[in-house]
Length: 256
Image (tube, rainbow, N blue to C red; front, side, top):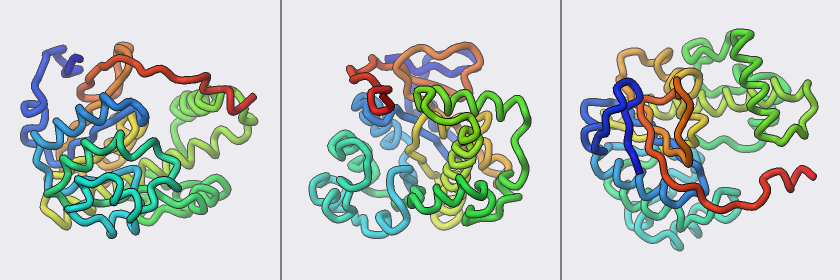
């Protein structure tokens, strides 16, 4: 495993990475257990006042109590994790346990809001001020093209081309909500705040960190990706850690 600061290619410790930052975005490949172990180490080193989870909605987060964070089975029952569609809660056990002393926030949105964003765009359903988070403007044409292609690839080419921009709007909504809740958690707790989220949402060029920079320019942040292969030059993260990939079935089988 390697922790690399993208700008200098300098190997760092988790504690050095987390110094003097208001918000620490910790990306992941959701089903890779090694990534959650590393996130737990980084949370312990960072000692945040709050942790925001992409996997929890606000109602679930409100039901979390400190004793549950070290009891995954009980936590699963209280927040109905098995119905959420996320991987086995045991994979996230190290992250929850490391967050035991922090306030827990949720940034997941219900399916109905995703459907509204598909039809009407992210700005129409966003809970915050769309202009503050840059959601009121269309994406630059070149970015829209790249993001459409990413959605095409992520769905194994199964989506009609006209649906791709709509899927991008859903991603923009999710990025906006992660940024909004991170800013809210900082305002309510005084920070610092750690955010647990997928690597795609942790991108500094257009993900949640980029929207947070627009909405709260006085806050400092750093984004760390946890990857299964070395990234290409210009990877949109401040740092990354690389682990072995896990074995998976054919991701496109569901589309066949």
